[in-house]
Length: 246
Ligand code: PEP
Image 1 (tube, rainbow, N blue to C red):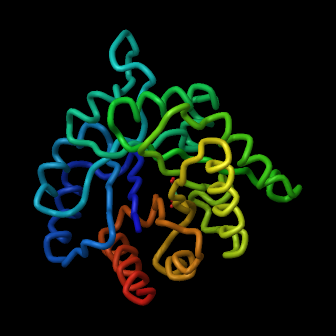
Image 2: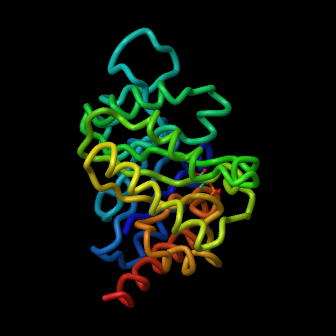
């Protein structure tokens, strides 16, 4: 079970320090893995603050080249060098605001994996695909265009675009159907099994029902991960879920 906290372009040094103070009063479980994705300038700072805790740090994006004249970009090698274990690739905000294409995302995912990062590849339909009944087909095609050619460490995050930051989530059978479909598509095309995270308006109220979905292997949390109380409540729900299912 995996909890990914995508802080996006939020939480400065003072807020990170307060957030981490509260983490030290909490008893983490070895059963649930957590990773925080801070803004790049605070990667080292956060990593130092949490080095005694079982939480890793990750990048919100990386480039498809390791070095070069790419102003403002982040090398996967540099992420690894600053202690990152994971990197998010193809988040819908990168796809829409930064115009990242499926092909570019595939290259970024491959380059992350080649640098020994674990890539979290985000896919998800928009509102109109879902309303017209194309959600499964759209995600399948998007996934096949973005999947790296060769991978060991890849997770997929199903993040319906219409759900990110809106408070709306698919119903549990829609989540289960999509996660099952993603797993089958990846298995058929690569012969590999992947874990699939759900992302989109996960919060303290809906976490239990999301974790109860059979094909959910964890969650990618945006807004709710900015408050330490909510982040820990979501983490605790994952621990409780695992204990109940044993
Ligand atoms: C995200 O941006 O990956 C995300 C899931 O955001 P939120 O939880 O705020 O919808």
